[in-house]
Image (cartoon, rainbow, N blue to C red; front, top):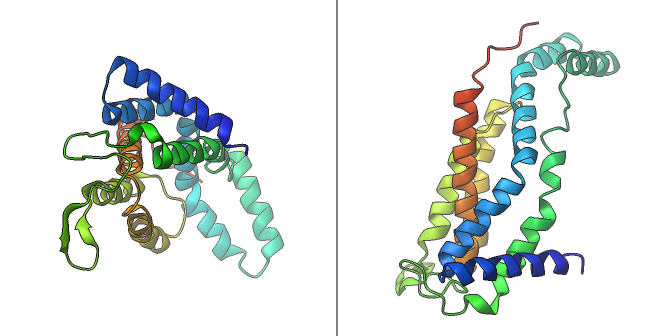
Length: 222
């Protein structure tokens, strides 16, 4: 299993942090920060590429309309536009793919690490289980899990802040649907995993806000 070596490394780092700060909740947050710092150049490059794509999007849409009856010419003109403005249409995706093995490794560790059994953090009694607040008292879902709700909200905010080069209506739909899908997906998972993902979203939001403040640029001109 190609994930195992990375999972073992993540677990070692998590336990090393816990040895210094004996709280697995704080250790998860610090591990998330470490991963974000390591991948900062990758995510920065990806965000910059997405921003440039968003800047040339009106020009791309104009070419779509101008050459709608000639797909070959349309593609040629769009690629020429990307080359002129030094835009890589895959630049926003490829850097993110590098992080997938680390994400799955963390997913595996935080879902199944025996060290998290009965490890408490703030209101959470066991980071290896869902929060299960007011168990048996909440209709339909049975109990209240706050972290997945917070994770979904921060994901929505992060997507709202992300540069978008696609159709605005489609982006708005995705910004709503993705957090809802992840809420259903993670609602009954280990709270340690929801804590990691929420922290990840918050760090992404901070990164995007800092970049927006630092790199306020004028729209690309034709």
